[in-house]
Image 1 (cartoon, one colour):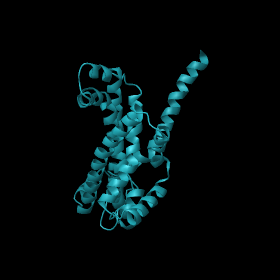
Image 2: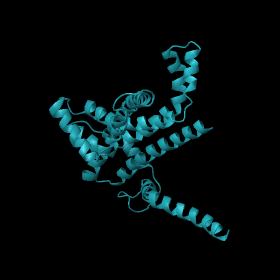
Image 3: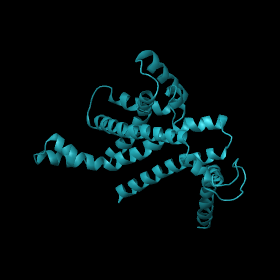
Image 4: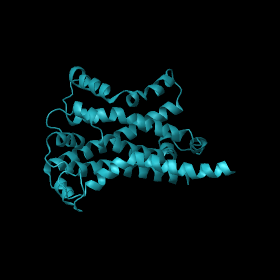
Length: 263
């Protein structure tokens, strides 16, 4: 009993220390993004002018709009494609299904630099797609779709599929069953996939940098250019806060949807 009490006191402390280790750098960055200091390395007073400068910067806003556009298209296409692929992998028996299911992990497990180089060669030498928005969107879909596949597959393993059979027995056709039964059952996983894919796509730099071409700039590429040429590093802190906020919001949304699913 005594050892259990000690463990109950130590584990929360360890958890707090681990979270501090993971988040302290991001917290410092966020705090100094509100500092009046031009270099963002010391606190000289609270200000919002760096955020004002970012939102008044045409290049930054253009890069933000590009990232939002690319991420939004990626979310829609990847979520739909991943849901359909997961449904087919789970519900239908065919030769090579197990191999195909395992191979969907490859875009996630392969190092981004390797994937980026392969996509660059594939776009320029094989299918001859011009570098820019089309290439970026296709690249993002290629590494985001597996996320939707595995989130939806996880949900499908917990669904009572006799509901589909009951719908068919009651006279509903396949499309009606899919619309009235299957999609509502999969909706929490679909929304969770979208919440996970959006920051995954929005934050990507490596693959985007390889296939962006000339004249196409997303927010991560814009931040990279600031790191090289900016005279006011604190602006990077302000933009980086956006990169921290977007995944956090996405994870909180996914957590909310999972709790709603359990309830």
